Image (cartoon, rainbow, N blue to C red; front, side):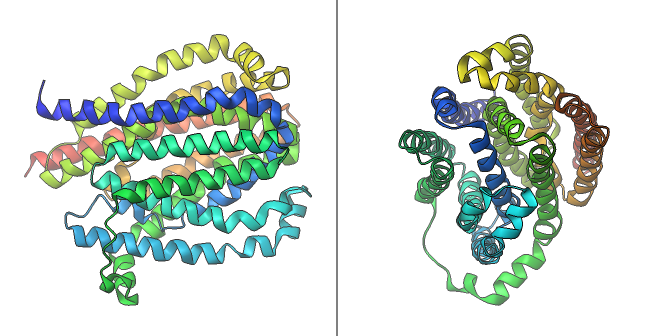
Length: 423
């Protein structure tokens, strides 16, 4: 076995082991949370986290994904400081959310949600900072520290939520536990950050120059990321709660969290490793095809047992494990199975457009996919379909999008390999 293959396997197992523990914790605590909180409470938390996420995902201007790209350490530092400045700037702007809490509550037709919107800016800042420190450590291949941070975040998020739920904190328990876990991970990952400050990085001109040089990240990739979370969480959750009720949203959100956990478990490890290794290959002028094939094989290997378990045992598992009121979560999971399997394939390679500077085409692909999937959901709503039928149309449309996306990824990789071969 070559040194490169050994290195890949070691780093993958390091990332995977941390993710296994971090995802095992919520599975162990899930039966407690499902009995301490109502589906309607999970629905409010889902809408809260979607609002925080749709802003927080672009808080750092997506500059966190530019951190592994430059060879020079000084350039990476400059990107990081610019990302921090943007994060706090967006955090201040997000104060508009709590100032308009009444309007937002009326829009959601939810008198409860508005009570928690004052915490949105705190959550927004946590998104930006966490992305920056995570990818800073990824640049330096501190995979053990990244794994440790995820375990800490998962333990605090689920453990504190259970503790607060036991003492009757309700929705506040879910939200505060989530916020505390975000900042705990930031603190862990900050152990690996060089705190020596170059004053030149804090100059306004430096920020402007950095944003100009890496403008595709705040302009194109931020729009892509914003659209992604806007459609797949913010808008999706709103349409479900508004048309099918908060109970349906609560059950769907719980299903979405725990069914996607095994996918995140594998793909987040594989995708971060792929991004780091692919970035290295580009610096060295090597082809991306071998690492891409290895990444896809690794990810899809885990999708087979996942699909079989979910298809044959998903409904009884949810009913037995979480309680009888969560039975429909298994039904929703089976409906989304084609989309979830293809998510295993596409997620690990999602950093390709960033590395190959194809963000605009990637965004065009996503707009096409979201238009198809949300169009099918809206069609179901307009025709007064049951939630399960509308969800099936959404799932099939999203599956078609993922197939087209996977084809495009490998087209990019093959074209990149031809380009490398000519030099």
